[in-house]
Image (cartoon, rainbow, N blue to C red; front, side, top):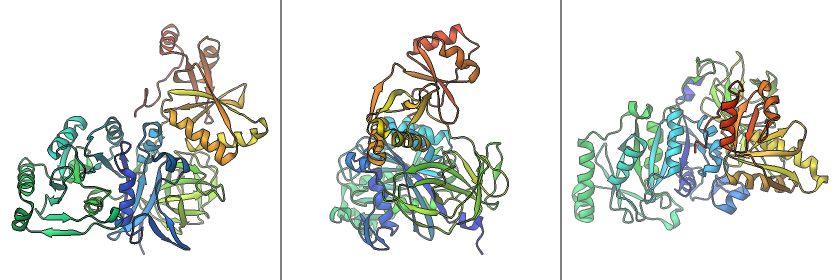
Length: 528
């Protein structure tokens, strides 16, 4: 009989992160192609009743905009391992969702555009990885298009991220004329051939050095010289520095044409660590073989339009999960049944009977669960809290048709629980006109769209004078409410936020009333 430790050794749980338009979603689908989860062609997957479209961008607004708005989970098998792939939003406005997803990952794959290199969002995402001590692989994508020279890209990674890039593969040919890659550990050259629209796995051919020199000419000579130089200066993969976030293994390829995708997926299996005991809130670790425990890192509704259900995404951290077992919600201490447990594949899902550390479960209609909660069997368990980001934009929401107020209130509560936006309530107005607090403008667009499409409640958003928030307490709230230019609103979890009309006024209040509690929030000014 398998043990949690043995099964965990077969798991790889990682997130894909990137700047928008770097090719993250395309790479995600190609992973599924190489993992056999899409049958023989990208874009299709076998289902119980025929075939269905497979995409990590399942939300209507994502498909309309062509960007990732919400994170998704995709599970598939590859090389006798179970892979749990967490696709994250790339846009800055949804950085809080990305941060939460990284809390459930053991590693990350950072996707760079060969023409753009390190972009602002790339740097911010790396900072999150470093803060959470998450090792990451780097995939330099779109090398089949004109772009930056590979040595220059390595220099950008080293100087900007202050991390040592260690190539696993090295490109033959310049950006826009990508022939194949040299494997740095063996020196073997693999040449790629294009397929129609990249819908099938790219044919690969191993070519010996003599033939490569004859057929590739100057491109081969240059690649050989560069590859040898990198080996001589010690740019080789080192597992210890990789796990310590001091180095990043680098792969070159093109997700669109499938060049180099298989080698990156092999790198995930060979380099990404399997699940390890997770740190608890008190600093101790819960062993893999201890009873079941998991972390709720995401709550999502609206994935199944037919049933309007609500799913809590749970990263299994220890023990063996068995569907139907009774578990406890760490925040409330209430016991609940896990009868409706499912494994995720984008918006598609199937019933799961057993899961192990590293796996991601969808617990359907576990309505007591919130983002950051622990679920557990046996000894009481609490994981370190997932911080909320400091909101930068504040809009007051009202339902246009008052007969739809019930739907409006239900939708606001749901979106608040998901973390789609922070909902702040005035003690006198309650849910009649809550203030929506966001990191970026697009969050308001998503909330507006979902309230109308999922709950039938069309809203209007009105500007507020607030520009900055500070966390406060009950003792300070009364005095702050009496001041001009400041208001105190509450989140559903009881957290009080003092909202100021300007940083100047906030600084003045702090200087004049040093006894008041006004705490900075995580990611002041936007971590992303």
